[in-house]
Image (cartoon, rainbow, N blue to C red):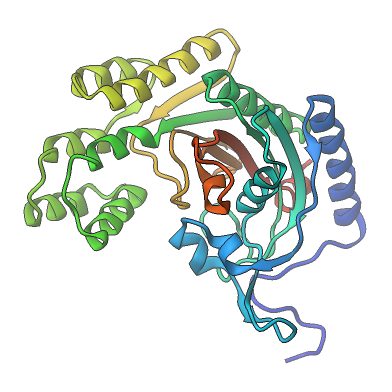
Length: 320
């Protein structure tokens, strides 16, 4: 192996690629600050318990090592969102706070969203508002970010994990069964769901089957209200999507609703969203609501609200 060869999944930018990235970074930071999002630069390394929080998926993606100085287990950040939760919790305030960042992260393995193990994650997070208007604000900022990067033909996909969670709450599943069912929905495997339902006694077996196929335009939301009639939590989640649908109905944005969508990180609690383009084979940006993440730092007992999005700027900057 040559001395200059990089590890698998690790890449770099040089020459025109580096210039394209830096130009994009500056434009994005100007946009975010113009919209009132303050820049933060979290550290590359933190104590593992601050980085992982409630996500087993994030645990698997985090490089860990023992600190020779303090003797505690450290991790290299694989996702910026938990760090923003710590930064917000440290402020100990109940006001609306807005953060933006553009940081290199490192993951143990690439996935369907990040094409390398060393992406540069750009994003924005909004704390302190439960109103659906906050989700709309960050979705619009995400769309503006892609427009600034000259990415067109965008399709916005929106779901709400609150629907899945509302029927899970009514079941008596083991942790292993819950993890398996989440993975089945993440892989969108109807055959695997049929096997799971045939081997597991569930109160809402028919609801899980119908949820798996709830995808499409605005009519999907009215169909969902019929299916989940009487489940107040599911109805609230669907009504949040209806409010978003009404907002974007005349904005010239192509929107589809995917009610079975579950993000890979388990900390999401409500509206989730992704953007796609016919010119790319994978999601370009994604995000969602993750209320209560700051409780892990012992600061908030009132379920501090938060929503945000992120994308790999190193990847997207090369397509301008």
